[in-house]
Length: 472
Image (tube, rainbow, N blue to C red; front, top):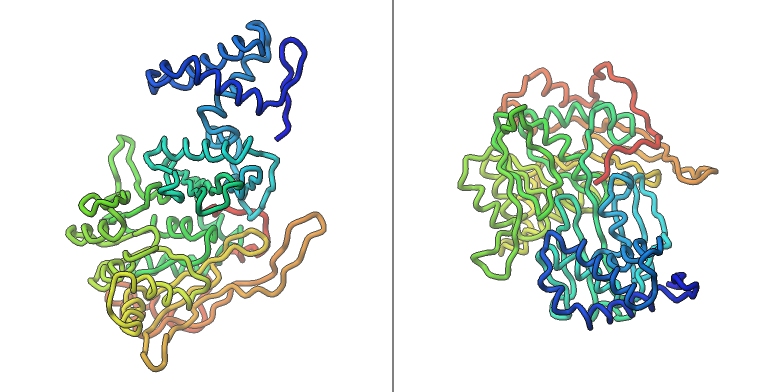
């Protein structure tokens, strides 16, 4: 970073030299004062210390209009989030920002809605500066980042999560490598999803039907495929009389609780946040939270994402008669069941065949999503897992799919994906029995058992559009 600063007397100096000089000056003259600063007034008092230091070093005259801006910038670099504060403290000014990725101290990349990647000119001042800033952010929120724990994840707020790593698990000259993910609440409607090309009217109708009559399902796909938002959309349709046990890891991404005008909850949600610890009695991870949930009278379990040994407990919840909605990272709909099985192995001694059978039994439906080249998250496949046979393997049927026909690069940039949603097969006899046992009308069950779904008078979905209501 080669930025220079013009001082009050007309000289110029590199900004990084001014920062380092001011850090040394503050350390030498205010080291006893800083620890006594009150938390609520810390930033303002630090600004005043830096302002006085710039004057006392003869960099700026007290009347210089540039003094305040210089003091603000140095305070942010010394005690705050550096350039990150311009984004994280003012998210309303950056509505399409989904992720800030630091590939090294001077390589900052923004991921924006619609699948757009922006290589920025933002930079820390040095590798050590990036480590200092990222460490401050993480430590401020109850975690630590140092050589003994050189990779960590922390929640900056209810909707911002940071994952970072430093030396020795990355080269020291890289500074801090990090990813800051921003989750935003969105009002999603049937019409928005259809117009964006994320889903067809027939798929929405079918999944609403399955939610209403309590069929467990897994939303699968890669990161930023839209799993969380789509799961949130359908989970909101669960009957308000059903008691829901929600488990999220650190930050709240699912907005399921509804309130009346007096602030009372209108539905029945038990919200849980994980609180991992190396001390067993204090370790409230997703697995333990699920185990506690079995002690309550729960209708629907929603562990936001399966990542580890909690998969085994989630499957057991599904097999006890409760309904489970969750998500998982996987590359395709059929590959989701082996992925669940591999996570179950982390907490089970049963063989692969048994675990696969239990996973298919617990989760009859897989909704697989992907963000295609045009940036639109789509439901690529709705898969019914019928059974698992140790000789034949996974027996499943594709109920719906999105068939990609072509991808065209536009002259003005971006891509257009040409494709269509298709109805492939009807539901199995086992799924029919499940729905009938849960109170579904026979007429509708028979409709979804047929190979063609009757259209319900909705307009045809738009397949190629720049709209993109799903962000996470």
